[in-house]
Image 1 (spheres, rainbow, N blue to C red):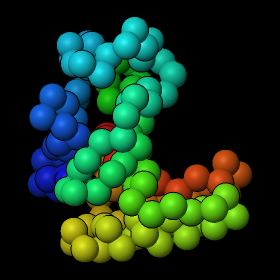
Image 2 (image 1 turned 120 degrees about the vertical axis):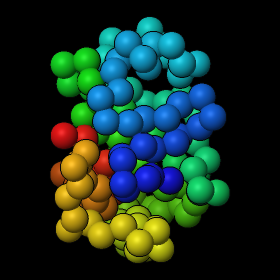
Image 3 (image 1 turned 60 degrees about the horizontal axis):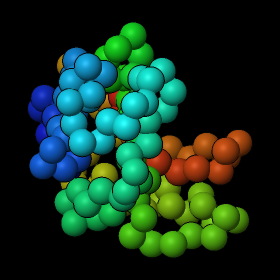
Length: 127
């Protein structure tokens, strides 16, 4: 999934995100569909990362990657049980040995549940 030593995240054979990854670099991938790089970019199809299916969203700020959001779709949750997906994400990070309290030279990774939008995600934030 994520190399915590350097912040490289392999989403697919055609797309690896890393600190300093630019919107210009994204434009040269098959995932570029005339997005503007200002709004959230949702990749069209679910991506298989470490044998799990994810909805992947990219956030750019000033032309550089700021955050990657992953929502695991291996299990279905009803709208009222969406907060349980956070437990799934916590377990995924624990299995990978990722400490959510840790900050790295390149950024940090966490599992979050946003009650206002009722969305759970694994967020990889780049400094």
